[in-house]
Length: 280
Image 1: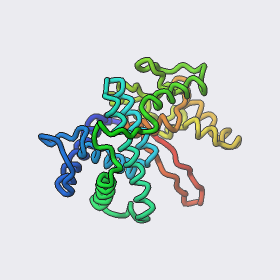
Image 2: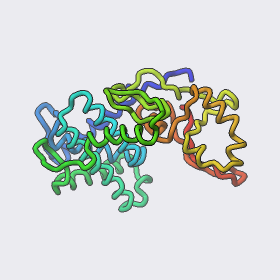
Image 3: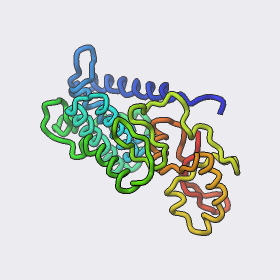
């Protein structure tokens, strides 16, 4: 790789896209926005979070969108965010994920539509929910997101302590990040400026940029493992004795952009190749 992947540039580009879309649909639908076009703890804020989750779900799937939103709110917690704001954001994030799932059922050919058409449908659904009172549009709303930031953090701690009690992990703000692989990104630094361990990776033995995960290896038959064992061992040595999980690479694909997912496909000889992650 001759050029570093500028994550911050792409992150800011996406943020700008979401803000511009919010202003566009605010003018179209007339939901409330703060002075000087400030979208904070109001209808515009609720729209932006819900709409953004619909877009992320469309581009990366709902589970990955949920990972992103949860990590973002955990980050806010450690930076002193008002817990009512976190509750509002998580509630509306969940609404956005639900909206996308509903759209997929209602519009079987949704992904074949143009990007602007997809955005219009998502925006319309968000506004419908907001007008039906299903979004949280202010901090005085008493409804509670069932997960809650505290439960998310405690879930990470419990995962590390019960499933991997003897595996060292990084400690973040007094809370273990729960990754037994050592690849999980610091919650206090979810916007890495430098390339991660995955950037430009190629297997020392084969030269392939495919990255095996724990789940990949666990799902292999004895014959498959035997045929890939040397390649897997070479990868483990390259990553200093560790192996990432699917969740590690999902998070990296969103936050760091150093890996991409290759969908499953069938070769010309009829051999089916399962989906996998590779370095960018």
